[in-house]
Length: 219
Length: 219
DNA sequence: TAGAAAATATGAGATTTCTCATATCCACTA
DNA sequence: TAGTGGATATGAGAAATCTCATATTTTCTA
Image 1 (cartoon, rainbow over the protein chains, first blue to last red):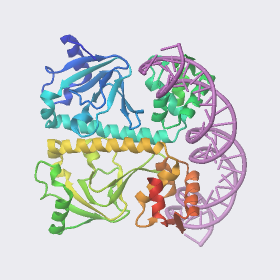
Image 2 (image 1 turned 180 degrees about the vertical axis):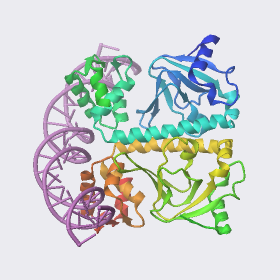
Image 3 (image 1 turned 90 degrees about the vertical axis):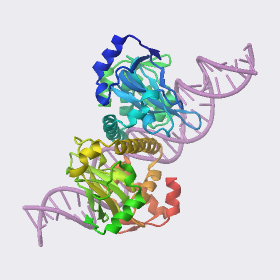
Image 4 (image 1 turned 45 degrees about the vertical axis):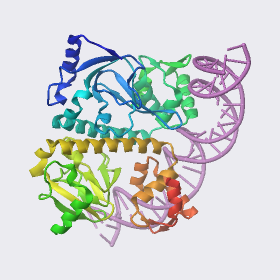
């Protein structure tokens, strides 16, 4: 992850993202700005992050490694949102990896200097409560909705969510895990999408060939 | 819901449940104690509660009514936990019903007098953040785990979770919705449980006849 | 108290999804 | 460079689950 030192760029991100409103003290001076390319890690699994991040541009995915070594996709987030806030508030839980899905910009507040203050800042904490409650609500809705649709629909959403431009390219193993279906079945439905002309296979990735169709399916 | 006025009973609940540790100010004096019987509502849908509750004994379920009038089960909670905290922090969201599954005792802090203070109390807010983060984690685990098991396993958990004593009696429509399967299929699997001797049908409710088997299934 | 609406129940056939077996391709390492 | 492990791929049959059709029973209400 590359730091962007241009003060002007930092200020622009801060101003455009509503970042400052989440705190009751002035965070501007100590806030750094990072740029992560697609595939790059913003938080590495198991390593307590040194910053509280605020994603102000881009999309990321959250993963964890299971006992058997398999990587499991957990969730997706898009700007604007905090990253690393779970690690901040409950230092006991495992640290899960956050990886950029496309070029991302993150504001970053160093925890070494601000952890204590954040954990005592009622404005920040109330904001966080609200965001967590909102996330909960979204999860419940997404989940209950998901359950009731066959894979075709959920896969369409997943492709649109994770595609970079027109290219879909996620490890099938992870995708199948995340979508809660067998590897085999995922391949069936992907093949079906190709047959219907929604996707075009290009080596080991897929090009979105009929975006409206996918959007219709994902509703 | 009946108020229990015995000061001694209130103090016992407060002491036994770790209630006071969630606040940085003294809540003891203003805290009331309520008793809810099975089936009774602790929070009614759409009506902003007048208290922040803290469940110190019993299990409850969270429901909401959808546009078409159907009632949808969302989640279950057991003591000790807050009830009505989502309504407190984000006053915009709809208020969802909380109903006792068995006799419950709830400590209750009147919001009229304490809302502002709670929303500015860093200790309470940090606690809440932690609980919400924990709930998130649990949800994610439950969701992803659920997805990968056939109904038999999930139904076993569901029966053990919602049974009152040895009697299972939930509206099939709600159960099917919650478990994410069709009404028809739920009935198939219930019939199968009866055939295998896990359950005994008694009129329109079911008696748990082989708890170990259900526990094994629910793992 | 008759009739309507909702919950319970069951059958039959169609879809979705799973398991297992097997083969190829690719990257990495000894 | 041969070999190993992992991801990709595909087939075949079985299991899980759905949809639709249709009764029966309960509950509510006019």
